[in-house]
Image 1 (cartoon, rainbow, N blue to C red):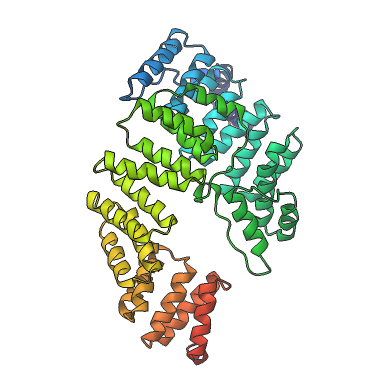
Image 2 (image 1 turned 180 degrees about the vertical axis):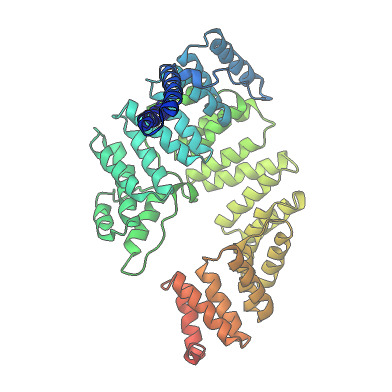
Amino acid sequence: MLYHNEFSLISALDHFFRVIKMSAKQQLYACICSVVALVALLVSCGKDPASKLDLSVVSIPATDDADLRRFLARLDSQAKADPSSATNRGRLAMAYDANGFSEAAVATYAQAASLDPREMRWPYLQALANSQQGNIESAVQLMEQAIRLDPTYLPSYLAKGYWLLDLGRHQEACENFRTSETVKSTSQFKLPLVLGLIQCHFELGDDEQARQLLAELPNSDLPPYALQVRDRVLRTRQNERVEIPMLNQTNSKPLSWSDPVAGAVVEFTRGLSGESLLAQKLIDGSRAADGLPLIRSLRSQYPAEAHLLELHSAALVELDRHAEAIEVLETGIGEFKGEHLLHFNLGLLYVTAQRTDEALRQFDRTLAIEPSFVQAYDAKATLLINQNANQAARETLEASLKLRSPDAETHYLLGVLFGGEGEWLQSIDHFTQAIELRPDSASAHASLALSLSEMGRIEDAFAAIQSARKLAPNDPTVQRAVETLVANDVLEAF
C-alpha cells in the first residue's frame, strides 16, 4: 500500500503544479481539492499497514478428526486471546498448513506478516502455501518479500528460481540463481542450484554453457528429475532441442533441499489427516525410510483406514521392496472389500513385476467396483497394447471416452489402433480430434498425414505433414512419417 500511496502523492503534486495553467477561479478550486487530497494521502501513508488487512481470526475448517479439532481450537483460542501477537497467529497458520487446510493457512500467514512485517518466516511460508495451491505468481512476489527481509536464506532463492522457470521467466531465473551463488552455501544446496542454472541456460538457448555446467553435477545418485534434465541437455544438438518439463508438471520426484523454516511446520501436524499428509510428503521427498515408522504407527492406531495401506505400499516401493509392497496390498484387498484403489495400485505393482494376467484381473476388478475410474481404463489399455491385443485395447479406450472429458492422448492412441487395423476413416477422425484438442502435437499431425495418404487424399496429407515438420522437424515420429510418404511418392507429387 505504501508504494500505491507514494504514486498517488506524486500524481496529486503533478495535478497541483498544473494549476498554474488555469484561470484564477479554477486555480482556487483546484488548489483546495489538491490540498484536501494531499492531506488525505499523507494521513493514509502514516497508517499502520495492518489496518489494511482484516485481522479477524480465520474460522477453524471443519474436520472429523477429534484430536485435530482440539489442537486447532487451542491455537485458535491463543490467537484470539492476544490478537496483536504475530507469533500466535503464525503458529495457527502453521497448524493449518501442516494439516492440509491451505486456504486458511494462506490467509492466516498474511495476518501474521501484517502483525510483524519484519519477520521473514510468514511471507516465506505463505509463498510455499501459495505454490501448493498453484498460485505461482503470488508465490514469487511473496518470496521476494521474504528475501528482502532475510537475504541470507538460500532456500528462498532456490524456491523462487524454480518457480520462475515454471513461469517461463528464464532470464529472471538465471539472475536469481546467480545472486544466490553469492550467499554463503553448503554442499547440500549445490545440486538444486547447479541444476537451476543448467535449465536457465538451456531455455535461453545457451546450450554450450548448459553442457559445461553438467560437469558440476554428481556422477551418481541423481534424483529422477535431475536425470531428465541432464539427458535432455546431452541429447540436444544443433536444430534438435528436447523440451524440459516444468518441475511441477513432471511425474518425477521433486527436488528437495534442507529447509529449517519449512521443516518447522511439521511440528504442528496432528491427527490422522495431518500425519497421513506428512507421510506422503516424506515419501515424495525421497524420505520413505523416515515415513515407514509413522505409517506403521498410524496403521496400528487406525486399522479401519484403507488409504494407510496405499501409503505403506508406496513407501515400500520407494525403498525398492516391491515384493513386500505387493503383499501389503494383497492382504488389504482381503480386509477391505470394495476399495477400488487397492485393486488398482495392486494391478500397477503386478505390471512392474511382469505378472500381466494378474494385473489385468485387478484392473477389471477396479472397474467392476468403480466403472468411472478412467485411470484403470488407461492402465488396462496400455497393458493390452504392449501385448499386441489391439482390438481389446481399442474397446477399452472407446469405453473410457464415454466417461472422461475430451482427451487428446486417448484420441491419438485410438487413431493409431484404428490405423493399424486399416480402418482409415476412423483413424483420421481420431487424429483430427486429437489435433483439435492439442494443435501443437507434431505426432498427431504426422500420423494424420499417413492415414490421409492411405485414403488417397494427397493434398491433405501434404498439408498435415508440413504442419508436423514446422512443429518438430526432428521428432522421430515425424521423420518416420516423412520417410514413408517419400517412399510412397506422396511428397514427390509436390
